[in-house]
Length: 154
Ligand SMILES: [Fe+2]
Image (cartoon, rainbow, N blue to C red; front, side, top):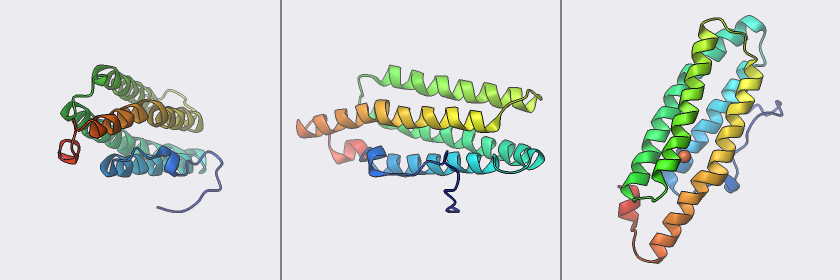
């Protein structure tokens, strides 16, 4: 990853985003890296911006789906009570991204920077609120002896 934090929109990973599950934290870091790539794509001229943005968006969609899949698998494995609500959050974001990408590919004007910001804010608040909720559930269940590392790591 190129370490170019000149852009004030860039996201920098910090412990406050950590969930405490290595696999998920690594995937969240990758989401941060992809978000920053999107912001970097916005720094170029319009033509550059367009091709890099499309290419990066493609990878972003793929990775978001992969990550949500992995997270949902974990939540089902640990029988997370709020799984349906969590999945709904994921589905809504994927639907929104796909819709935006489709419209963009069809020629709809879009301000890449604005879109990247919306995506960044969604990811940050999702991690800070909803992912932290299941992380807390895991800690509680572990304390009660109802979940083991094997349950968590599969
Ligand atoms: Fe999530």
